[in-house]
Amino acid sequence: MGWLAVILVSGPALAGVVWRGDFETGDHSQYSGSQMVRADRLAVVTSPVSEGRYALKATVKQGDDPIDSSGNRNELVYLSNEQVGSEYYYRWKVMFAPDFPSAKTWQVFTQWHHDGCCGSPPVEFFVYGEEMRLTLTDSITPWKAPLTRGVWHEFIFHVKWSPDPKVGFVELWHNGKLALKKQVLATMYEGMKSYMKLGLYRSDTIKETGVVYHDGFIQATALEDVMPPPPPPPPPAPAPEEEPKPGQPKPEVPPVVQVPETAPGEGLPSEDTSSGGTPGLPGTVSPSVPGVSEEMVSAHGCSTTGGPLTALVALLGLLGRGRSRRRG
Image (cartoon, rainbow, N blue to C red):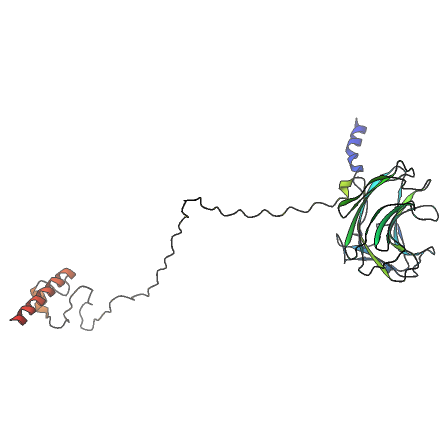
């Protein structure tokens, strides 16, 4: 029972990412080795990158031959040793520099090479003229696409490794779209293992300098482990304002009434206490009114301290008496 539990727990862990060669270590340490004439030919750079912080800049100049073999090259090597019957998904990204040479000959940027001597690799991605191509066992080219410079190309390559043309198969996605449906064919040479190389390897007849960038290499056993995550959903749109129904009046917003500030004492009658009396109030008759004596006001029951109504009655009486005198 304990043995079965170990299998059940550890089984799912066998699936997933097998190896990463994405340069996020900032160096070549994820790879088994290199074939280069100088360190600057396989430089780990921070720009341009497709993901993460680092990418590989592979440069080849005419005459670069670090292993004294055919062609010119600067490549990294990963001894993956794919076995007969194994099946993997590989995902990586490649960008060709804007001035990448156009030549009617081969320029290999990724390959799975056999561990035997000599000859073309059983699986190779390369540029020929203005095309990117996939060729297997130096005889079948199941995929071609126009070469576009200055942009990142994403490849997801699904392989069943076998020298038997009835067992092995390949499947390819390019930039997120299925570019090659599953095609059954030999993917290895009989009696040999394969290992992966990337960088740039080309004919020694090309004179111009070639530059290729590599990033994000992953080897896994399931497609979901190499597929990029979907982009995050956009933020929700703000809710529209509710419009009033037909015939329903819009809610009235009460106007804001601004009350002017009044300085202390402003707007009040001025006070004159020079005569020693009480300041006059609105509606009262002060003794200083011309033609009206204090005795006259007192005779009508009004004084300087009387209320407004008493003062008004007294004043009207005086005016009426004056008119009678002028008529007489």
